[in-house]
Length: 306
Ligand code: OXD
Image (cartoon, rainbow, N blue to C red):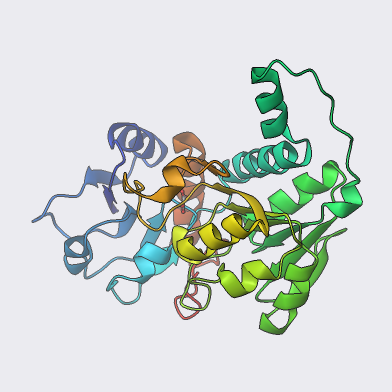
């Protein structure tokens, strides 16, 4: 079996070493133009030229959770497309989101501000019932986040495109349930896949429906959020703060207002990193399943877009 590795912004060495050790019968190469076509591709944002040189791929493994960039390309027909599912990302996502929610709930920014000003002042505890967290997108990562938030006893609601039952999480399904879901949300956590149906879903209309003084945590894709609408709602006070791990353009252009906005906390797309060892173990298992013609978790439905 020939495996071609074509991952932008990813040092290839640990991947080659790991894949060769896990699949000793396979030839694993970093793709170069002119290479013979491969049977399996391991990719992250490859150029279109890569796909155009792959007439016989059986499977494509995306080493990230989101496949929106792939879905925008012309892919070889007949190849099964598989995204990472968990592989050590879900726990990272849960810790990132819980950290952000708790920082808002416990008013850490205001406490820091007081301490720097030499003020020793404890804040009155707020009722958790007034802090319902709404998780948009209940895939592997969303479900783990929803469960983790429950351990801190926040009321957790979930919104998804298809029904998803998670114990203790009140589920809202589909477009008609969205206004109701938003109206009950104090902290909005976005973990949706990016598709034409979800692009710009965080906009003036939807964000205005959140409870006053809401917080927004976007850990999915920058193109879910209309930047100017968030800025307007922060200015009006309807949204009190935002934690953004993703931006429409990454790295964020240096003149973008998000960089220096006092109510925005930015991180450089770091909420859940791909872990090489866990990912290789998962890809190895899934290659074996694909070769046996079995179903694999995380297989992308190209029609649906995720
Ligand atoms: C992603 C990832 O899909 O980092 O954004 O895995």
